[in-house]
Image 1 (cartoon, rainbow over the protein chains, first blue to last red):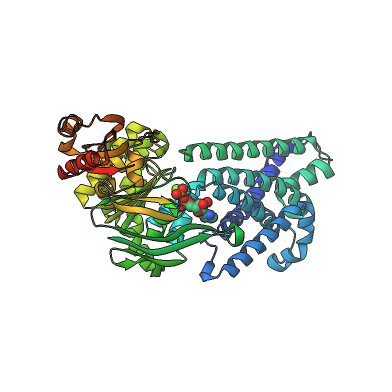
Image 2 (cartoon, chains in turn brown, red):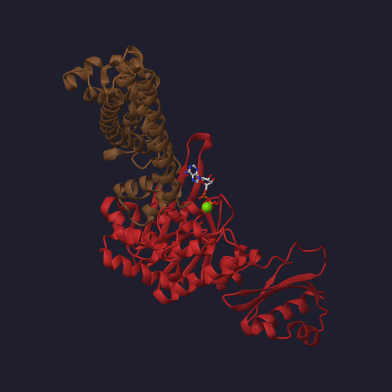
Length: 233
Length: 326
Ligand SMILES: Nc1ncnc2c1ncn2[C@@H]1O[C@H](COP(=O)(O)OP(=O)(O)O)[C@@H](O)[C@H]1O
Ligand SMILES: [Mg+2]
């Protein structure tokens, strides 16, 4: 139990919380980057490799399109169906192989990204699917390449939906990061677990909880705001 | 300019197979406005989409300006499409781009530089009378304005052919007229060849030089509008001048088609005077086709066969188109 009457109690608390928050930002930030990169690609491919999709025949081969589509679908479904706490444990050997350890903020990136990618991919898929087919045809009639259609039509028109998906994903990742933190991934989850739970300090626990609530609010509002500003429908 | 030859296109297979295009042959001359009319499901969209190869026919050829579109792929196909603009029923504008940026997309695709894109976009927006809306988003525009953007986007790369897939079908009658007049004007000013498809007769009446009537994947008749109107049993003629069913009568029934000056001639009075026939009027319809008053009157001609055939011959000798119905 921490001594609340220690003159340095609040300064220590602030220090610890800030350090935890910094680690959380780092972990969530990097895993978010990976999530956006791979999730966007996976989401776009999920829609476009369907029959009659823009990439139904990558390199002229429908078979390849089918394989990419099926494999992605299965992988994303698996990723989405494993509870995060189990995924985290399952990934320990892989994480160790990749980062050398499964403890610490950098190691925490691995399970976070792997949980985030399929989550975001489904949201991207929904957003891309909502882009009217007619827009693709219009661009084709202008002589656009598939890449142009992908970037300037499909992704560009889905941007408001993607912004909402992004904020939902950030919120999810913050939640997961607390879970990884509790088992050695550092960050706010680690603070809550070690100080709040193991050394029973309600102040630490509350501080973490309030900070998490604020972060979630912030990112969700940011996403909503961005989606509204970016949508001209 | 556009020549479609023996094109067949089916969808589905087995018993569910639909022949959307069933041996279609069609020619659109340079600089003319050609309308394809037909009911929903006739195969019109499929036909127009084979012209810019959005749809590949099962067999047959499609030539546009000398290029066989069915043989093109990749870069060559994209290049050919720069020369064929297309507009759509639902406009298909990018909601996230301003009017100007929508037009510029066309120029981004053809690889024009930034400054050139900007000036060309503004120039073409001026041409469609939308210069004041360059920075608006499509959602802020009326249907007619959206279609003007569609037209500007289609024409930005200076194509020689414009394809229109029911471009006025989502618009009210007034706006439809404005858009049709704009297309006619642009076609004249830019020497555009226009192929448009529609289920509305009004469109053909207002702007088409030539037309084809389509049903169940087949072209039933085609030719210049004027010629079709003076062709026996022309479906286009019947559709443009709906005179209804022929009432039961033992007398001869004829239909006279008037164009231009002939409208003014006192034909009926003359028949009574010169041939002693007591003419009965069974129906009449007058339409403005291409800005010219054109009408069709269905007359009942009592009297013996000789009197009737004499009267018909007389009318024909005056340059009137007369069709003996019974
Ligand atoms: N992609 C498609 N798949 C299956 N059937 C189609 C497809 N496109 C059109 N068809 C069918 O082909 C026929 C002609 O359609 P369409 O060319 O759209 O007619 P229209 O434009 O005259 O209404 C219809 O029976 C339609 O159901
Ligand atoms: Mg159609």
